[in-house]
Image 1 (cartoon, rainbow, N blue to C red):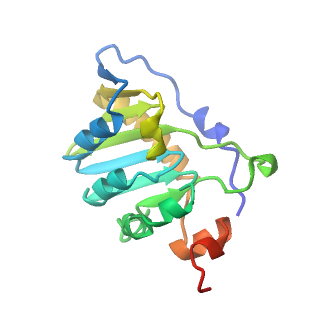
Image 2 (cartoon, helix red, strand yellow):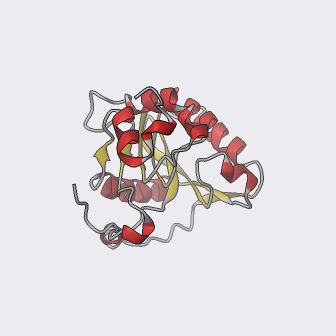
Image 3 (cartoon, helix red, strand yellow):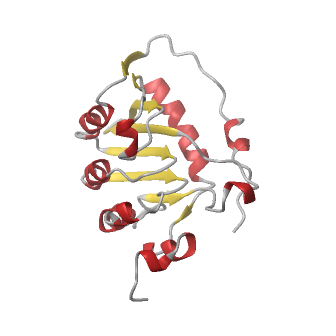
Length: 198
């Protein structure tokens, strides 16, 4: 299945200036900050390049409604151990239009890639009234990110959160459900490394 060039999505969303937005800036313990803000979320929508942080995946599984668009789950032997959690997260919202984890883009090598890379890293926190807070920065949802010099901004503004939500929805409309996870791994990695009995 061929997907449109993703940069076309960004052009649809007009920039805004939200002078009233209260913003926190974090440069240390970013995983801890993300976990704290996910704790009481009623709903989470997000775009992330990767999703391999076990603590964050487990926390997302506890949230009533989740939809995350990702480019890759960065398969390796270490991350395959989390396949049960990823499957649980994927099964969320099955009665709705979208499942818990959607794939945008494809998994070809960079040298073969003809489409834009979905490299966004933002998480929108919702309450009963809708989106009200955004977590955005350089931090990938991976354990490796905890060893890096990263940053995270937490923007407390419904205006900003709704703006990010429109961007999320534009990316979501270019995304697709990930097939049964074992099948997806087979298509995108060396299957024998994870399923030696096949």
